[in-house]
Image (tube, rainbow, N blue to C red; front, side):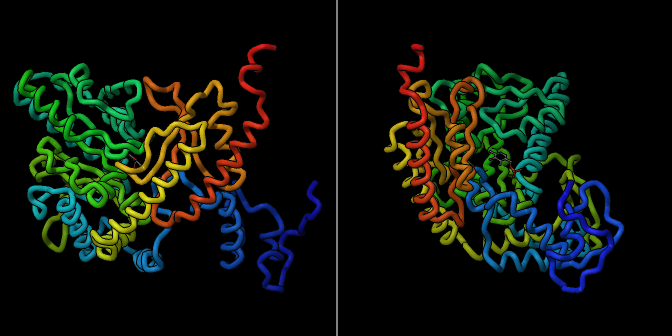
Length: 457
Ligand SMILES: *Cc1c(COP(=O)(O)O)cnc(C)c1O
């Protein structure tokens, strides 16, 4: 029985949020309330619930933007009423989306930045659906033209993010997941031949493998597919899932050819809301040339009396994220992205140094060559005296979110931990994390019996 029952409907003239009737009982969970309530009270109570989510700046699991300049907040507010799909009501917003597409096409070395086809999406997941559909459509057109069967398309991938599993299931494509070799963090070129055939619609290469944050070797994968074409006559395109790397590699590894510099790369997706540093809800997909996007996937909507091609899974979509992406591209420029990401990389490398010198850990990725992030495993899981899941729990007590999870097949016996360094995560914050990891390891290993004894009762 609750100690502080309130009489329903009792008035409260104090104006105090926490003595308002609404705040004296649990907030409605299953029914829309009968009465209206003052905005300050409702706002305070909802905000208090949200505080239970934890502190996003201590969430080291996410790739996504958790910090933005006040001007981004302002633009998001100013765009609250803008619907991306209404291209004739908001032609300037449509123009801004188009500028972003051309800027990214140019950033990724499209042979024709101005004429390239591309669009915004809600994130890389929607972009993956669109990219996958274009691969499937092109493969099917080619097969039909050759009078061949079109009922068993497959997509060859390495350690993909779940969006590609969704694409395969939703759009009826067989997913051929190439298992990880021992010590590998991604697809290796020599593995391709065993998995591709005439029904392969494409190979997905990942720039920033979700598990370890390493890059797959796009150019080497393309070279192997070139050799396959020579030997077997199969012309298999690459789609690069650059969800995070698409906004990192151009600034931190400008000499690395992973993008349209590699002729076999047909399309690229990236998440604006990851290292693009835009707020949540924006991704991008760009095709090398407009011809690679099959015409019958494109719908035409009226646009200022003319017509505007669209390719999207959604209809109504908020414009703020796209406008904020444009702001971020203008605001940071090459110089700014490089500066922010260089600072992130320096912090990641420092963390990697600390992790590897602690003793129980072995680095899988050290933050230096791909994303500004670190991943590690236990050097000797049998003898460590604790698991990485234990460490995750300990760190959680201090508010840190550092996930522990198994690698995909065939390395699912390896459990790893990963930390992403993003805009807004300072070196100082990571130094504090390191102290907490040290303290947690000391604590966990003090609790546990020495490993030799645990087997001889
Ligand atoms: C995050 C991620 C995705 C999904 O992107 P969203 O923008 O969250 O939809 C896809 N692929 C990779 C490699 C990712 O890191």
